[in-house]
Length: 89
Image (cartoon, rainbow, N blue to C red; front, side, top):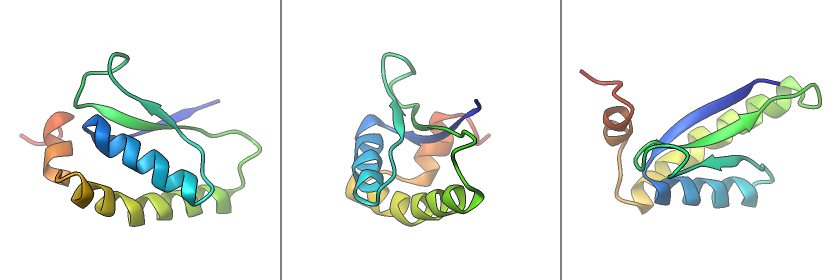
């Protein structure tokens, strides 16, 4: 099954996101150092036939709501994420 990855940057943001998502009923895997570079932590989400399109949409909306909160809590930014993943020139 496909595994989707959403980069969140430093590990503390990843841990915060996993906690926040678990509190909302979502269970995702965290890819963190040493399996990825230190500042390239990310949320891993395997999608299977058991997931309904509504489930996936709700997960993405929840990530969109919670990521800014985690970034503020950890004093990190989207710009830092883009830089860590070399998405900015």
